[in-house]
Length: 186
Image (cartoon, rainbow, N blue to C red; front, side, top):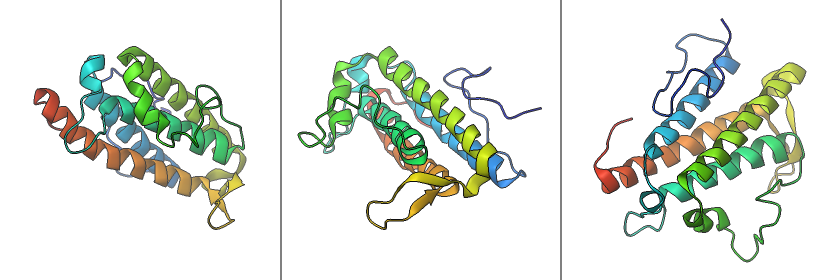
């Protein structure tokens, strides 16, 4: 049996635990899928108003978080790993005017729009990961180099970073969701 693809036989509140004994790629992808599903679970069933309710003193919202990780999926797997330019909605953003544009504009998006944006970028990311794994495995180097170090990223590093990105924001999502409707847990 192959690895279950994101969205296959899975509702927004189901998650599959990462494998306990698997090769490195399956383990990394298992953790990435687990944390992707965790964020979707934290935001499932909320209205647009609830998705944009901050937890004081922060102005962070669940809607902004969903849009932020959608951007990160696109940035790391499409732009950094494969060298693509920004696609819409990211291409027309004036990032100099608002470097946190995705966080601030999510209030204008419906829950369905946010979910579709994230689902689309996750599906694209999974295809790009598959391609990189087939071409060179986890040692595949990115098309773009680090702006700070001038060194390319390995696919291993990018997937690990995305796991960290989701895990960090899933902790934030826990607090915000509990403040909205009392829902707790993983």
